[in-house]
Length: 164
Image (tube, rainbow, N blue to C red; front, top):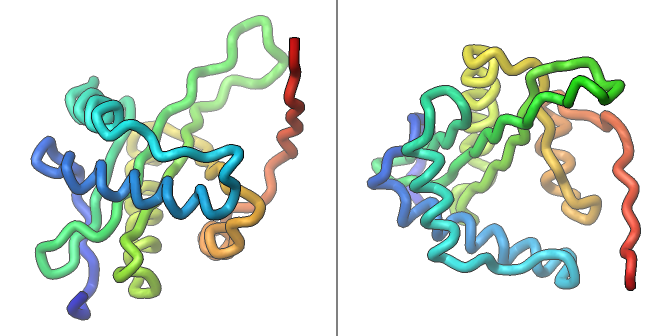
């Protein structure tokens, strides 16, 4: 990859092929972390997902891409969370999940930072008050990356497998 500052822009339907490749590559990296939890999703399903998000109502979700020298080398997806229902104790606060992927050969060059900063700006403009990144605890690089951008523990998610 040639050196150069990344530029970030909204994804378009013309980007779907590269978005699919980035999602699949990210899945393969996560399988190395925890093969019992992660999988490589069906490429057709990923393609349908991005097509639907890009065609969806403006402002609901975002997919932004980073380019260096005209090549898409990363993406960030901001998926708005539903508001808590009236019967729950959580205060309503507009929130979203952030998912960032950077191509292996573009890491360490500011691509991820440019994507996260752009996603945070988009979130503020969209009225989102809280972003969260679901990071696997063994993904030390991602934990450090998001930590450098001000993300911190905001609770503990406990889980348990149940059987019939």
